[in-house]
Length: 484
Image 1 (tube, helix red, strand yellow):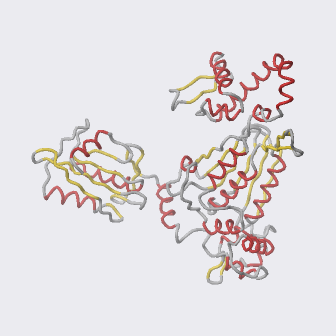
Image 2: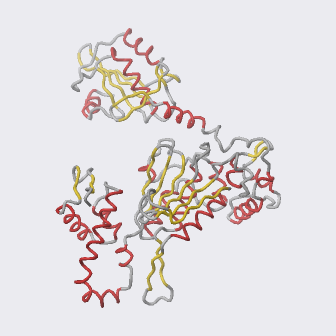
């Protein structure tokens, strides 16, 4: 690294991947930061920068480097950072330590550290345990552990296994296996090891006679239709099922079929009506499959949940996003590392999921094709959820035939404008109450009306004291006031 390159680096200021220290006298704090960067996405620590950001350098000698090397050795597992010494002035140098990320977890003096922006802090125990679990994931997972003693092939749904084999062979995703030989089928699906069933086999094919419920209570799906917009509302429908993944997927899809509203229109020149479900079936099916592929099966009380409200649908699974994945990263192309790769492999062979790594991308595409807003992923404590919203009523109406709208517009516009305006205002407030970061173009898309109409409604709401803006136009958010 040249002096000019170092100056450009320092000019950018401290952040997630960069920290300054005035001298190696602060090496203990520097090692905590290096440890945190190793546990994150990597980064650099630069010695020789004053607190006000001036590149001053420091005197270096054999003793300085030996002290620094001794401090580095206290990071475990052992790591060898890249060290660059950059001359700054006569007898004064800056030293740059660079480390990669993605490994670990690492500890400095037996304590793990975490980097959040320009701040280094000690890693919470729960996060450290999660990192240990991720490190062991390749060899030791719930799904690839042998079933408890006493669980046999007779406890599984043989018909379901047979159907998986036939489908996988038709799709060319499995070689020749006799569909009538259940044990051979399980071996071919990598669901047995050394003659013993794996937990994944039970997760996929547990017969819904509840004989295994006491040992595997987490193999369930909860389905609810609420009369309102939150779980504080009363149930219109409440169901819970236990069994294998294939069985649970069917129950969830039937539940959605019972409750999802379908709008339609008759198109001139066509004999059949075009239907537009509030939530595209392919998208919700993929979201359900993803929930079963990525959920945490070690949580005995956990279950995949489908909650339908008046204004949105939410599919939730117990667990967390792993290996650096975030809700934002899900929305772009990414490598797939399913938390339960054996279960994911069987679902792929059975044609439930098409290709690893494309699930979220397909969900977004199918929602766009279905003319509904793109879903939103959220992660909270031990829970990952994806929320779908239907197109606004105005959006459905805009798909009705052009003939009727042309005849009625002149007669009805005066009578209905006030009512439709009020309805739009209510929808805008409902959307912004749940998603305060929503932009006006996004609102227009969600409600199926023009941006100009949205701008007018928002302006009226602000002037009437029902809505206000917090922060700048970019990066701020909306606040729905209580009197709304």
